[in-house]
Image (cartoon, rainbow over all chains, first blue to last red; front, side, top):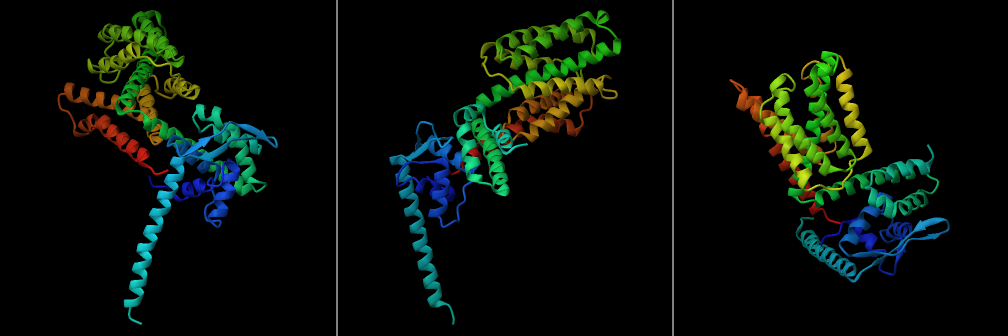
Length: 109
Length: 276
């Protein structure tokens, strides 16, 4: 299963443990060096689909600091999907890097 | 409008079940994520609208093709009821009274019950009364052949199919208050616009408006577009079958329902195939 970049970083933000919605948004931004800025709509759309694909589980709702929250956790299937996607991107990067290096060596100065 | 109200209005784009399950959480996340920055807040609200409509689109794409067609056929019957109601009311207005047209008046009452039952999620009742109205329409049309646009045996048969499905396989699904209100308003408007009550014009207004609405919401929910396309195809078949010299555009009308069905199937495939 291919993951889009926002989903990839949202799932990656759950590697160290369950997080609530806003914490996922912040963590995904940190992990991507500010490149992925999840909006509320995007976050909940991808969480909904990830729950449907059993990549993520949703905990019970609770109130913290007057705000309604719910923690989301990565499932073993979600971890596997992340590993597979990471390997796929790394493999693609290795192939392209090798081609770029080879091209640079043969290019006229 | 306060931020909370605007965000809650945006949340209405989501299906009711999602709003109930996660609405409060999404609202609080949105307000927390937006901080005090107005631009960020608006960006989050827009994203909520897009995601809500996207979720509705995914929900409709999850339905099988058969179920989608069945639900569209039911809706086509409801639209037909509106069309016949418009025609009947136009006739009563033209004749200035229901006493002179007792058969038509009785038929109008039947259609009103169909629409009321449908609006309350009582599909079995709507279907049974609708079937009775379909049988009665043969009598009415014999007396008043000017009631509908091209009227032949085709027009009563198509809604009968939807009424039959309602009667034997009803669902408890209640149409939204917005949809019911819009249909009611459309029937009234079609009668009060200039020349609206003259033969056929009011129905054209209803059908044209429903067609435009169907196209507008097609990406989110193709049911209305399919329902309207069924009616256009039925009209096309009728024109070709009963006109002495059928014109080429009429033949194109027949292709409306197949074309919309193909487009709906392609849409469902694209939505189902999207990566997470």
